[in-house]
Length: 442
Ligand code: GDP
Ligand code: GDP
Image 1: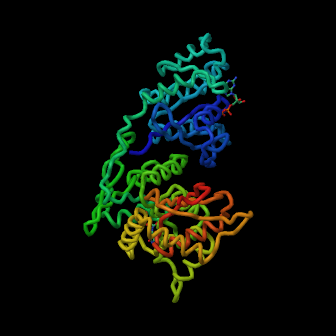
Image 2: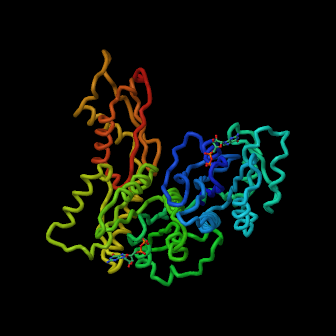
């Protein structure tokens, strides 16, 4: 099950990002630019009371050129209602109830049960009662907070956790099931791809706003192989809410990636590959997911001999981390190589869970260090003693070294390339961890 999502909405300057930074801490947030807000949306992850959840700081609603405040508020509130499990509606306790707060409250009242009214800048807790006037918004108990000092945040987060949907244990799926996320920019052909595989009738199921988010995946079987397509509901959704701001597209992609074993990153051959495409692929890769790049709409490309070979070469040159990523040229429209793409994704899933025996690994390590010796920085030579695989999906290798800090980045890359040459790991990231050991155990 995906971690729940919490959206922080409210006027500008009420303290949303102050609170966001407090609970997300040092964790890197993804930032997305959107028109109609004071600043970029921020996105991060937080933990409280044993729960892990996503937090979206929506920036702040501003009027557009025509002073169409209503429109902006409506869009932000509606999107938050659709996409988030809990909405933190933040107001400024020092300013009192603002007419805009009234406005936002009206929209949120429809889903009161998942809304948490937070009155920020109540700096003299627990004495202050300034937050009580916000009962006027009709959203049940206002929770006082001083985001700047952190006072009140414990109680607030406790309350928040109560509102999150039940956690559910990490669903122990059958090891033989591949969780596949089809991701990419809008209009590259993601839903066409899934439709081609599943048959359109499978995807056209009734989809009501705000229904439980557990029914969002679609199982699929091919040649006895079990797949689960992640967030097929999210792919459908775009047609339903054309007006909705794209705020949450990034978030949806993140959630899908987090729940997947393998990500099929779809790009548009006709439009060309954009940096955003690589960013998505990179995100999946850095999060330890298997990656397959599907170059779609290949039917639109005038082909000469070697067109795909050239295309592929150019892609790999542009983005070195794609080196280990399989690239497949497809047409979701005609169905060309669509099942091939699925087979490759399956293979990547297998490679990602591969385990290498310790003896095999150490034979390889010895061979690699003999071919290219580790560089020497000090009097004592740098020694790589021993290696073992400490994790799978994706594979992680620990290597014991006398001076871990002395091993340069490019030597680690050399070792990883050697491991790949030996065992493949097609489409899967692999990791090497260096551990300190002074002397070889005798
Ligand atoms: P946002 O636009 O809603 O994200 O608001 P910010 O987080 O950027 O905060 C706006 C201003 O309010 C900043 O100057 C903050 O330092 C200030 N601020 C935020 N939280 C508190 C608080 O709890 N108490 C006080 N006194 N000021 C705060
Ligand atoms: P999504 O937003 O990524 O789900 O993209 P869609 O699946 O909705 O496709 C966007 C548009 O591209 C639609 O008009 C599709 O008909 C078209 N499209 C998708 N795949 C192909 C393809 O392989 N070839 C061509 N020519 N058009 C495609």
